Image (cartoon, rainbow, N blue to C red; front, side):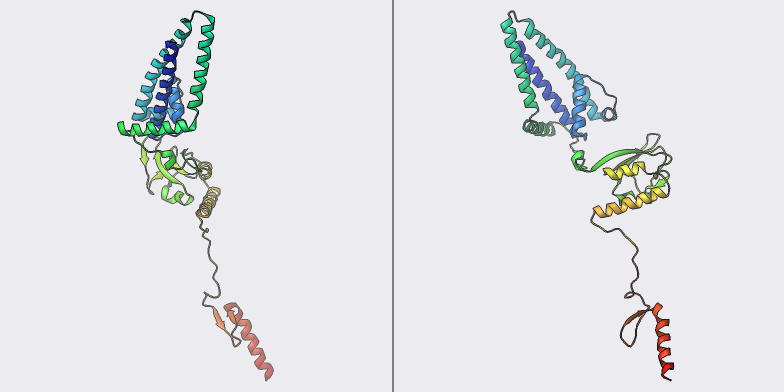
Length: 292
């Protein structure tokens, strides 16, 4: 019975450690889903060669969190299995084995439903976050909510190809901000990174652009090719962005007769334009000669 209690204690502690690691990774700027996946994979010793895993390795704070989690996970797994084996090896009769098995299944189900509870997770997350802010110096910015990733906005990376509409252009000439797209950074082909680039920054082939904006606008931009068709898509994207902002697209205004200087008033006080003057003069002269 003592071994079974130890098994549940180790399980609860392990889940708590993984949950703390998830919150710590979230506080470094990783999304909730990515933090959950990476924390569980590190604790269980499962490796994934993904772009998100590379982000963990390159970040010093995330690297320390994951490495600590891997060590604790290996120790916890051995203790976890040992307690489970001892719980059944020490049993000498069948009734005791069935009783232990029922307690084991019931305890696992109880822990599972508690861990799936939104209320419990929300409360636990607030407690962990408050504790971590007090005792650690983790950079506490939730970039996912700051950039509104839950909506239509996202951050993506675009690889500049030779046929891309963006290739060999100044950022100021591209006017991406008018499409509702912001360039957060440019990574050159040699690895050099330009953060918060300015208008005179040139986008070259094989560069990587880190951009932020609406999902459909970013998709359109990543697939846009150089040429007249790309220029047309740029204009259409600007008009769509203006409509989303509640503004009307800019179109050339027609000159009205009221604003033009080519107008006059005849005896009947009727407004005329310069194109109508010859006709009116000819009509007036015809009336004069007819009277004579």
